Image 1 (cartoon, one colour):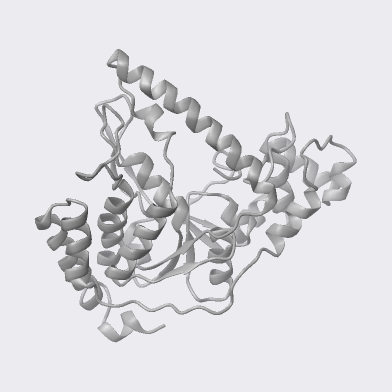
Image 2 (cartoon, one colour):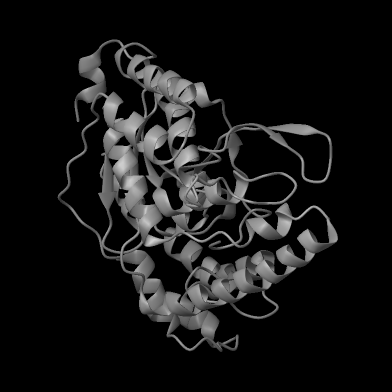
Length: 341
């Protein structure tokens, strides 16, 4: 998902507790997809469902893992995607095709009695109903959320630049291309995780990536980082065939500008790269919104999670108590420091 910089840019591993007291804007769609992907039966790959057959993996992750952030003293605000730009349609269509192919392989693996989770994870789909249920649960938990006009990552980055929050939270490197000074990977999936196909576990830690450090290490500008991303491929374009991150960096350093580079490479994407560049530099944003953390609505959470979606009352009660303690005790000096904007 997004530009592939994983083997090119290194972040700094940190402990979750180091983010205590920080406000973090979380890319909601990216995070919900993570929950839908990893919260599944380890053998069959089936997501969590309630007695009516509704998928609830996203609600499970949202309740339990967000409560861990609150308990640590982190103040999350979730930012939801709005209307995608026209040049993202191809990416969406290609992802849907991959999901269909993965579904076939998933069904074949189940018939053969083989482990199927690897294929099942690739079929994850976030529906409008799931999004609305997620917003509803966040309201009940007292966690603020914002509806972005377009890309959630762009809005998160803008909020960091305006000092409304300290960092963005996402798994997507496009956060850097939208200019987020700081973004955190693995925020909502930190913890002990099983290694696929092995009886072993690893500790996943949050990773801090700072834009200024990245630009300094690569010896390029913010605009040139966007060009680098476009050459490699982003959520909005496929990139140049045969051009990986290292080659792209050499081109950026040699020719400096997008126009200069386009004279040396063959651009085959149907959309103008200048339009993609402009979108990263000036995406649709909202300037007016309210961010307020509130005490959780215990009865509403219980009704929604236990009575409507069959979650364990005992577990849900413990989480509600954890959220309350995180707001009133935790790492904060007072309840006023939690609720002030």
